[in-house]
Amino acid sequence: MQITYRQAVPADTPACIELRGAARVYRHLGWKPTGEFDAAGDEVLAYVPS
Image (cartoon, rainbow, N blue to C red; front, side, top):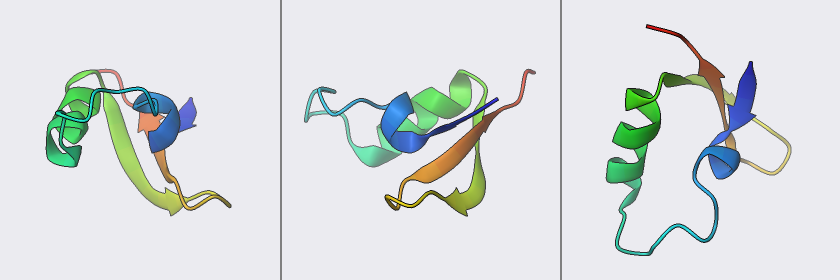
C-alpha cells in the first residue's frame, strides 16, 4: 500500500507541527518514504509493517 506525504499529513494539521515532527509520526506508524514523488511533487510513502 502506498500513499503520498500529503495524504499522511493533511493540510489541516496544526502549524505547530514541524515537518521533522510529522515525519517521525508517519514513520512511527509504519510509513516509510520510497524516494519517489507523484505528479504533484508529493513524496510517495509505503506502509511497512514492523
